[in-house]
Image (cartoon, one colour):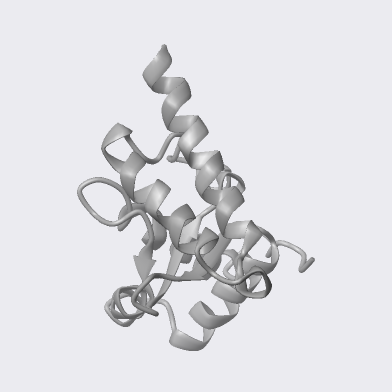
Length: 139
């Protein structure tokens, strides 16, 4: 695993990428952020594209972001529960009961893939968020 950036200017792009994903997912938006939309947000921000690429790769390696290909073949990104914990103003669940169907659909897409193409990390990600939504709904 890649070490987390030190709390200086190098951490800024890392936290901005996590924040962009957080603020652009969940009801009424899709549960994962389309790659093209993420890069549009990066282009409209003060984060350099090269720094954003490095930060996104580190976030994936650190288990803070998942990447998956949806049923239409589009790359999408979502925060893991550990990724949410890295943001000071974020808390679980980041999704609501309105997002349950979409989270289940992500699992359905992965389960429908051949075994050698199925991404267990994505299935685990969706299940973690489903559990967090259901725990809050049961309270």
